[in-house]
Amino acid sequence: MRDFVCSRRRSRGLGAFALTLSVLLSPALAQQAAEPHDHSQHAAPPADHSHHTMTPDHSHHQPTVDSKRRAAPAKTKPSAKHDGHPAAHDAKRHASPAKQAAHTGHGGGHDEHGGMKGFLGPYSITREGSGTSWVPDTTPHEGIHGKVGDWSTMWHGYLNLIYDHQGGPRGGDKTFANGMVMGMAQRPLGDGTLGVRAMLSPDPFMGKSGYPLLLASGETADGRTHLIDRQHPHDLFMELAGTYSRNLNATSSVFVYAGLPGEPALGPPAFMHRTSAVDNPEAPITHHWLDSTHITFGVVTAGLILDKWKMEASAFRGREPDQHRYDIEAPKLDSFSARLSWNPLRELSMQVSWGRLNSPEQLAPAVDEDRVTASAIYTQPFGNDNLWSTTAAWGRKILRPGQTLDGYMLESAVIFKKTYTLFMRAERVAETELHEDVAALDGQILMVNKLSVGGIYDFYRTDHVKFGIGGLVSKYALPDALKPLYGSDPTSGMVFLRLKVI
Ligand SMILES: [Cu+2]
Picture 1: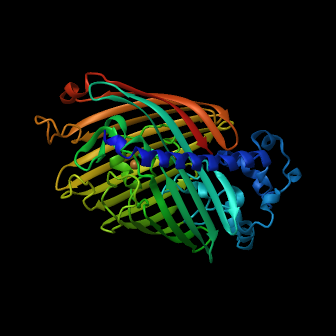
Picture 2: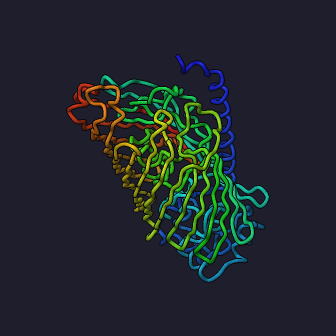
């Protein structure tokens, strides 16, 4: 019932989202017609980039997969688009031997992503995940690039249309859409980079109670009861943030980040920004152990990058977003976090982080939370155009006052020929909320486990658009105490269509 109250508002919003997506797609199609351009080459091993040293004039912009294989670097022509390119000139002007070396190794931030470099430091933008988080340098950087004056811009996004069936007595069925669309822009400023970012979600249009997802818990639909066995919708505005970084030398920088909303320096990159997770349309049940702070209304982060290390600290609003998913909530800086990230190899990114969240839950305002997380992401291109990415993560919620609850997650995705995707996610969570309305179990910590396996076949693919069909199946291992609630062996699944702008 409640779902219909704001349906008019929602359908208007849905129209806006569709419009945004079509605006996104039209340059995609136009650009692809004008300039064959394969960004995903950047996921290829460094050996493939040996021609970078030969072509400081960025002529490596030309290849398609096929032409790249047979192209002789000397014969390639610089694209007209990159002539008079401010970022490119800037890169040349500042080029030091160290930077050129980094460029050879595909690490130097400059024109290879349409003028985009790291927002936070002098490295390739492929290292940057959501908020101020890091992912491996080998992560494909997919999007539609442009230039507006001194600004380099990029857009990307995806939209899933999902039929969801969650099994057992606590399950349910729903058809809905989720996804995200993200735009970012940056320009040189002094010896540094000024950046702005916006990320929108279509989730609010699915209704305040989100979608059925067994074992998921967190946030609320009505301000009175927890969402249990459902995934909450994300807010329409997931990120509206600005960054400034100032280079200290060829590999180091200091930066500030401010968002309303934004993502504090806590946890691994949010799941929709992990290569191992983005193809799976369902949210992790460990979300509130690891990356649930990715939409925080009020964040200020300052950090220091020393080559492969990043140290950062945030002040932010501890309270999770409320049930009103279309608004911008009042910022506060009442919570703190710190994170240490390390990318020892191009394929590997690791972090440990700690946060003290002031009254995160609307329904338990007297309870604060300390959160500790550790995670590692390994992303390895292999063979001819294949990619494998895995994330392992642990998160601990220490409720104050209250219990200490651990969550574990292992997820992996393999993408063959950019067309066939297989993914899995295994999770184990110490739960108290699932059974809080069962008097006999109230207060007990029960370990629940979930395994999901699925895949996508992208039957339509151009340089900037992928359209595919997918499915996944989920199984659970539950303690005996929960079997009367969930059934002895529930099975869940989703089938979906996915449109991805890359
Ligand atoms: Cu979330």
